[in-house]
Image 1 (cartoon, rainbow, N blue to C red):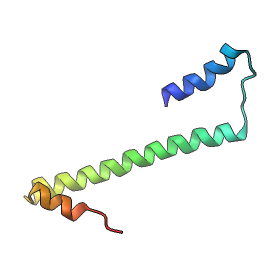
Image 2 (cartoon, helix red, strand yellow):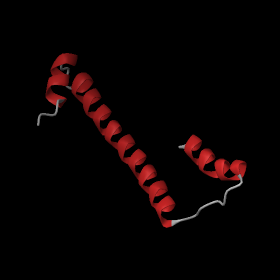
Image 3 (cartoon, rainbow, N blue to C red):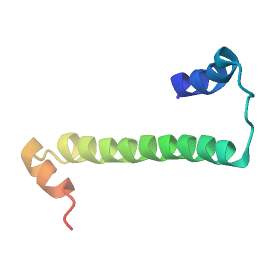
Image 4 (spheres, rainbow, N blue to C red):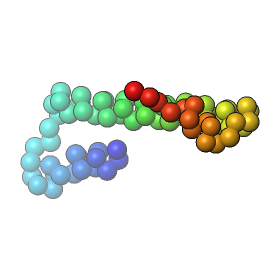
Amino acid sequence: MLILAIITYAMPIMTGRKLHDSPSNTFAFWTSNIGMIAMTVAFGIAGIAQVYLERKMGIDFLQVQKRLRFTS
């Protein structure tokens, strides 16, 4: 995210173009950040569930993987 922010800010300055502040830029910024937060929360919940099943309930690693597998 930091690299994308630097490129978004620095490229117009380096190329001599006007720095754009449009609604689509704001939308892209917020959706990217909300997506990163959602991904972090999802990984955190999955990690807590895996640790609980392996350490607290004493289930084998491969059995935990079978229980946590999503089927469609």
